[in-house]
Image 1 (cartoon, rainbow, N blue to C red):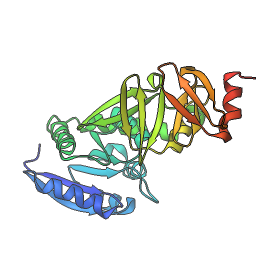
Image 2 (image 1 turned 90 degrees about the horizontal axis):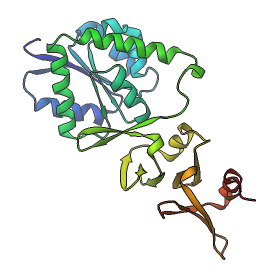
Image 3 (image 1 turned 120 degrees about the vertical axis):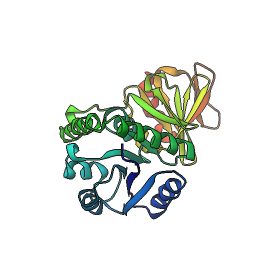
Length: 260
């Protein structure tokens, strides 16, 4: 392992780049060799500067983080920590390709954990193994959409600097809470920074239905369809939870439940 770790930061958001720079400034034996604001700059800097480690934003306009990897070639990529606010990508990147990933917004401890993991990977000379995983990920991304998993099976949730994986088949319902969606699993609730619209599109419609702008429910968890005298609708789940049903979705829900 080099005595000092040479780091390149790639993110199209200036505040995001500054955040990583500030955190790295607190660490020993770190040299920030550059900061790129787009994919094209990132490719040029990786080739010219040969950093030991890259913090690489996944979602950038024009050339994405994966496009950068594809252009450089996975075998030539340095150790990579993906940064992303896009939950659907995060689990795939972590399991298959990256040294680690940081799901925005991340705290100081989670950042330190990722950096320690990167140092260990470089020290043990395991970057080659990671680049092979990057190559496999790129092959998957190039595959026709029909060959990819169509619906979410697991959702990664970051809690106190650790990542927990929530199986979709354990979710009872999902509710909106400001910029977050809350996954309700039995008596536990997990917050993810994801739009309800995105979750609705990525969940199997044979199993889940969005019954209200603020609620997605697993259909087999519904116990009773409630109608009030004022014309409002709701569902009661098997655990007693009641969720509002919008009038625009009432008829579809009745059909899905087999209600005449």
